[in-house]
Amino acid sequence: GSVPRDGATSTAAALAALACQQGRNVLLVDCDLPTRGATHLVGVEPSAGVLEAASSPEIWMSLIEHEPESGLHVLPAAKLVSPWKRLFGSPGLNELLSQWRRRYDLVVLDCPPALMNADGALMARLADLCVLVLSWDDTPSANVRQMMRRLRPGEPTNMSVHLNRAPSQVFSEMAELS
Image (cartoon, rainbow, N blue to C red):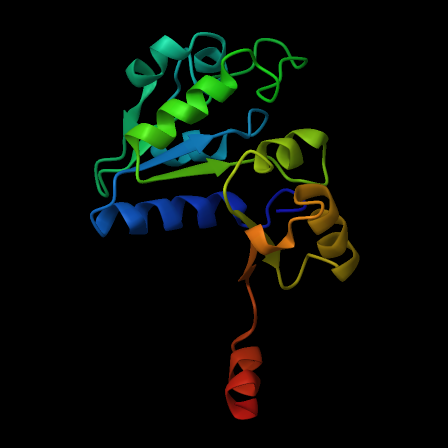
């Protein structure tokens, strides 16, 4: 998403849970260290999480939480000890991504808002596919263009868009056009 509260975490969690319920082996990773939305969704308060796993990749499996309703695996984020710590650029991040790709059918990275700081855009560039989450009532078109430039410069084919909170009349009008 571009800014907080656009529904990106809910969208990421819903997509991950849906894929899990369809029999895929799925990992949801909370990469939004300041807000820890995916961590709050599973209702845990871990002492260690994704940031610690990126420093010591051999421990990540011991940090996995299981969401009981869907069976989804979640790698939470612990409370930040230092606001200067960042996930992107952590020494073991590339090794973690390799291990996750080997172990899971689908890895969903719930990233921080792309227009708030560089972390969201930098993490999203590590993904095979980036889904922009837009809010009908909150995301200006200028933000969409800016997010696309930040997230995937030169690679718009690896990007999709999910629209949240669109009024039902929009879909009615689209159906009339087709």
